Image (cartoon, rainbow, N blue to C red; front, side, top):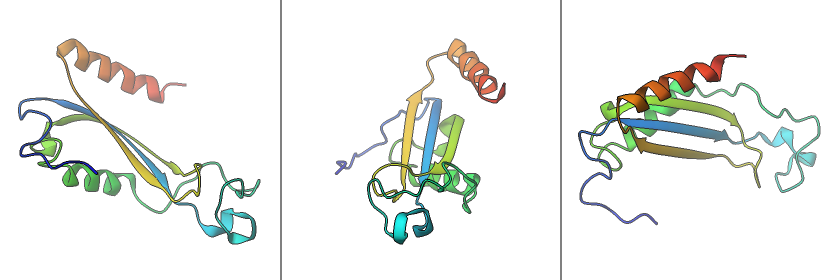
Length: 122
């Protein structure tokens, strides 16, 4: 359990970089006999695929829910990297991971921009 804070973790003047990983719950059809469990994923089950939820809607929910908890306002988040995938861990029930850090300086901003292009280059 996370203890309640009287103020957000990051100061109001911090610019933030966020990474979100959405591990989406797998349908029962991906499991042997339709029963989820460790080592029960069918060999024919896709390792990744487009799932019904839109990445932008999932991201907006996370951003809004962390207002006044981790940051004062989601306007502080200046860079977001989002990955949406089918869960391959344990019972494959799905989870959301959020990584957040302050941007150090202008050089850090240039590094973030550069790494964004690295992600889409082949």
